[in-house]
Every structure is written in structure tokens, then in C-alpha cells.
Length: 562
RNA sequence: UGGGGCGUAGCCAAGCGGUAAGGCAGUGGACUCUGACUCCACCAUCCGAAGGUUCGAUCCCUUCCGCCCCAACCA
Image 1 (cartoon, rainbow, N blue to C red):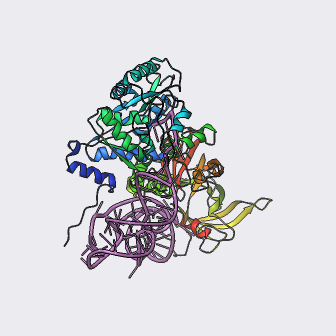
Image 2 (image 1 turned 90 degrees about the vertical axis):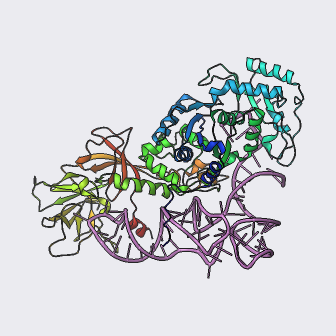
Image 3 (image 1 turned 120 degrees about the vertical axis):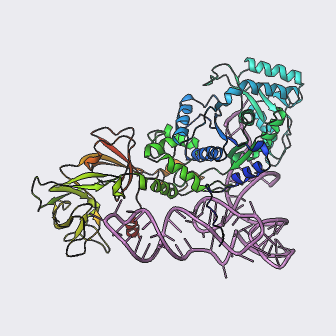
């Protein structure tokens, strides 16, 4: 017999392979130190969640650590509102940075020192060129750039100018510090990249202490090195920056050499995962805010009802690779169903109530049943009541049943879930011909088992008791965009694909009384419908609001669609 | 166009010279007081294409094709 190979605890990916090799080679003493480095200029979205799960997950699995570091080098865009939200989101996802909460701005002094060293070593110079001149001098994809007129200043001159830049002598945009590398480099990032720019702007942490700020390239790698990061994981668009990352570490005289590793960012069907675009949706009020349940932000997913577990599982399932990809929304939904299936209590909500009068039950005759809250009845039960008037789902009744219809129709019988068998005897209509009620009878002998005569009946449908049900609002959410790749159209604004039906509000829903004191954030399965959460913002005692997280799979709907 | 990447089923994704994992979706069936769950089966003679090396190639080489990223004092 062959040895059964145990399933790996985590799906393998190229980064783990690489780390395994590093450890085998004894690099960094076998240590794994990663970091999640958001810029606090917006809320985190699913793409960030992927990165968070990757970085913190690696640290966890290899017994290392993961830092949360804010890349706050651009005071124009950044704000403490975002740092607070980001911290909350990372925590909610289930990760802990311990004592390692850092800011690139913590290193402004050291970064300044590195710049001074580079100037002294002839690796950087102060340029008087305007942004236009710098752009023009950079050359094109095919043509080399030209030397900056300031390129040959002496270290002494540069030092003087840089000191005065820092002292606030020059206005914004008048000068920059550039690295002196190679204006003919085929990699544009190496054509004397800008390191520092002047910005007389208040910084959310350092206040007015600085009027020059390092940019990403000059802050990121150095911050990694300072913190002892071993594997600096980022997305593919930074690949061309890696030579600069390495060069700068050397020029700054940093001995610790983190390895930059790039992976493909996440794209999801029918939504956008770009901070810029998400900001636009919020700013122009196409959604209610960053935490709108339709938003792919962590805050939005949270309010929508997604669990941290489901998002972590999603990150595991989609994997980590270097190929561009667009993941289907169904993948995320599947993760939520798998997570909540066993965890969420199963209860009843009638979304669009149709009144049913049970003629063989007297007024005031109330039957009660103890019914299971979970598949495993031993995990708990709740009591439901049935009275002469009940409500069923309007879509569970039709006057002319199609082939394979297993629900209610004139003359037909169905099971009232967890209760008796219901028979439709009469249809009540209003003057306009709209069905406004059913007159039925129930088989009071058919509780709990098959009918004694083994007659054929339809499926079980859900219902609530008219005299016991609690009114509720139900919000049905759907994909935010009607196009699978809204941002992928060259000549159409992504907002033109906004799905007008992404939110449908049902005001007249009825839920069973067990839910009367449901708390914000409580998640349930409404049987035969889907998974829902009590809205954390708008739900109040006596005025319950449920958000549909995802529907249950619906093979009947699929059949009908064919 | 110069440079850097990437192309394995509808969607993700393993694979690292020995004859295509797994998940999602889909299909068929079993079960069922949720048309849910669960369970069983099916679902790439083929790895962008064409050549070459080899006893043998998705894995090596060559050429070609396609897609993505880079010319912000953003990150």
C-alpha cells in the first residue's frame, strides 16, 4: 500500500515555495517577517483582504510576524479616518499585528538621513526642473531620457539646497530630490527617479514638522529594511520597481535586504476593486457610503453580513499566483454558504406575504410546535405557532402550475414546513383579478410524518402565523454592476453599468416571532431563501431590518430560466 | 515600440522531464418536511500556437500569437 499523502494545510503557491527555499538555505535565519502596507487614503476592499490574508497568513504559518504599516508619505490624500477604519478592518478579519503598528512617517528622520548620505555619496541631486521638464527629460518607452541640467551639481551644492528645501525656503513643486542612476535605462523607474518633493501640507501624524516628503520608492523599501521585513509582498505593477527597491537599499547603506515578491491583484466579477473607483462611487453618492452593503469594501462586506471566516476561506480558495485573473462572485458566495450553513439558525421569513385562511381551524385555535433551529435538532429548538390565518410566500402559489411545480396550486396539497399538510380549496381575488388570498384546509393528522394514506403531496413551503408574525424590512442585494467587467470598457464610464436593481427593499415582510429581539449582526438562514443578517445600522427593536447576504442555491429558478 | 510579466477546463489553480491535483460553476443521479444541505458519478487524450531536444515535454530550447504593467513631484 502506498502512504496516503496528507492534504496540505494550506494550498501551495509560489510564495510559499520561495519561502521554503529561503528557509532551507538559512536565509534571514529562517525567519519570516511580512507586512501589510496600506496607504490611509481610502477604505480596504476585498483585494486588500487577499493581501492581508496572505501576509498575516504567511507570518502565522511560519511562526513569524506581520506588521501593519501605514504608507503615509502623501499628506495630500491621507487622513486618520482611514487609519482607524483600516485598523478596524484588519482586526475584524481576524488578524493581529501585536506591537508592530508602524507608519512610514515614523521614519521621516531616518529617511532624511539616508537622503543626506546619498547626496554626500553623489547618488542624489536636487533638481530645479519643473514637472513638465522632468517628464520631457524622462524620454519615452523607446527613447532614452536626457540629463537634468541640475544633474552635475556638487554634493555640497546639493546638500545646501536639500537643507533649504527641508527648511521651507522653496515653494511646492519648485525643486525635487532625484536619484542619480541612468537616464538611458530601459526601465523607466531607473531614469533618475524622484525621491523627495516639496509639499507645504499638514500631515495627519507629523503635523507641520515637514514640508518635504519622500515618495513611495524612497520610503517603502527603507521602511521594510528598518523593520526587518524578510519578504516584502506586493502586487505585480510594482515589479518594475524591484531594481530600484534593491538599488536604493544599497545606496542608503542598509544591510538588511528584504526580498520584494509580486503577485497578481484580485479582480472580481461585476464589481470594481480599485480604490480610485470606489472613492468615486462614495463621493458621487452612487452608494450610501464606504459600508454600503453592495460595496466590495471590507466595511461593506461586513455590513452585508459576510463573515471574516468566509472571506479568509475565499482568500485561500482563490490562491496566489502571477497570472491576471477575474474571479467569479459565485466563489465568494459559496464560501459564505459553506460557513453559515452549519452556523446560522434556520428560521422563517415570508418576503411577499399571501394570506391563507385555514377554514378547519377555529378562530382562536392556536397550535404550537417545537421545531429545530439547526439541521441537528439537538442543538436547539424554538416554538412556532399556527393560527387560522397564516401567510405563505406569494411565489409559492400559482393558478396554473407548470410542469414539475411542487408548490401550492388550486386543488393541490403541500407540506407546511414543520407543520401540517395544506390543501388549497379556493382562490380569492380582488376586483382587478389579483390573487389576494387563499382558502385552505389543513390535514391535522399529518403532523410529523407522511400522510396516513401515503398520498402524494408537494414540497414543504414556509409560512408564518398571522397572529404571531412580526413585520420586518428585508433588503435584497444584488451585484453592484450589470456588467462583468465594468471598468474594462475603454469608451464607457464604469458608472454607466451600475445595476439599478442592486437593492430591492421589501417593506411588508413577515418574520417569525423568534426573531423579535434579534440583535444587529445576528445571522440567520431564512429557510428556502438564503442567508441574512440583522442590519447593524438601521435595524431597531420593533423595526427589524434584514440584509440578504446571499441567496440559497435555487435549482428551480435555474430550471425556469431555461 | 524599449523594458518587465503572464498564458493549464466556463472561473480560480496545483504541477518544476515520466505521461494533467483540488475548488467554484455545470450536468446526471440518490436522499430530502428547505427545488437547500449531504452523497455518488460525469466534466482538459490535453496544458496559447508551431517547430526542436529527448526513450519520453505542460514542464528544456527556438520562433510566433495573445493579454497585462511602466513615460504621476500617486501608491
